[in-house]
Amino acid sequence: MAACNFSGLRSISHCIFIIGLPVLLLVQLLVNLTVPRASSDASGDEPAFLVISIEKSGGSASSEVRKNERDLESGVLGLWTDEEDSRLTGYQDENELEGRQATARELILQPWASEHPSFFAELQRLTQFITTTEVNCSVVQDSDGNQSTHSSGHLDVLCINYWKGKWGCVAYSFSLDGKDAAFLDTMLYAGCEVHRFDPSGRGSREPASIKNHRAWLDWRNPHRHAGLMGNVHHRLLDIMDSLGHTMVDVLRMDLESAEWRILESWIKDGTLRRINQLILTIHMQWAGFEVGGAEEEVVRFWYSVLRALRISGLQLVYSAHGPVNIVLRHKLADSHSSYTLSWIRTSEQPR
Image (cartoon, rainbow, N blue to C red; front, side):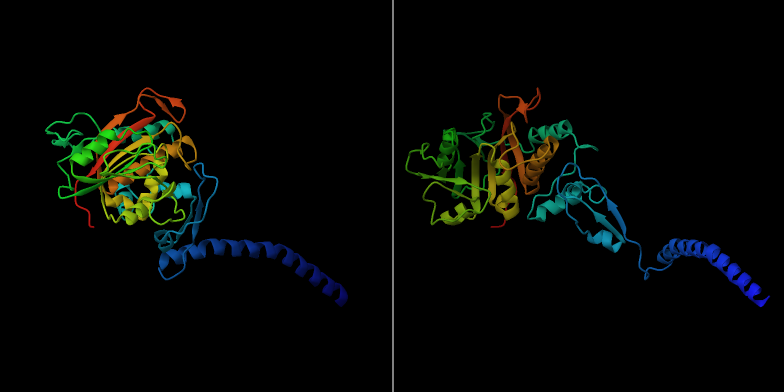
């Protein structure tokens, strides 16, 4: 009888264990879900959850984890790709972005022109930006040394209103096609120290007062040679140091699609702020040297580069487009393959 009772007790205990264990696990799960949330709301000293948000990249093949101090302080850790981080959606408005670019030694990509990345939206924004002038030059000087109160419509005139080279100036020209003759003459009449750069040496100009260099621009940091002798690519900063210049009053360049990486390098090393007037030809029939990505990414990169020029203090004074209407293989009526833009700095820069 005792054995029988003992066997019955074991059977009951076994049943209670089987039924009770899931109940206990369910209770523990409910406690884990409710208690930490309440404690994090009740006291700022208690650890809060780290909410991890993973967003899909807008076309970038690679990604990296970037830590944002603001989000860590609020208990939110975001994981972004390079592409998503550059959009700054929900974290910075345009004024904050321009403030960062003004002090940054890197190119900060501008937000997308529309809610969803679009080639045509990006191109429309870029075209409007590069065709809207900001400064009116009421007094100009042309290649014959004549000053007038109206613009001749030629890009190589010198804007006298904001001319900072009245007591001597430095002018650089980077050209492979020899179309800088009017610019060189204008700078000579203005009394500038004129330097012309052409790696081929074919476009050397007389008179001897024009200093010709068989050198060209590069955005990388190549092996430095003594002086500027030889057919060697140089950074603008190295060229200026070699010639003993801290500022360039007027710089003209047509770099045949290398301008995008060159300008980006000037933003990074601070050279951009050493230029008071920039006459620049941009090319948009293809992405440019070492520029890649989807079409909308390329155009946004272009816009971000030119926007950084504006943020640095340069303002658009003149814009003229070339004859061809092809942008990244698209034939378009309202956009062109090339534009020549004249930018001028209207305020003094510290030397």
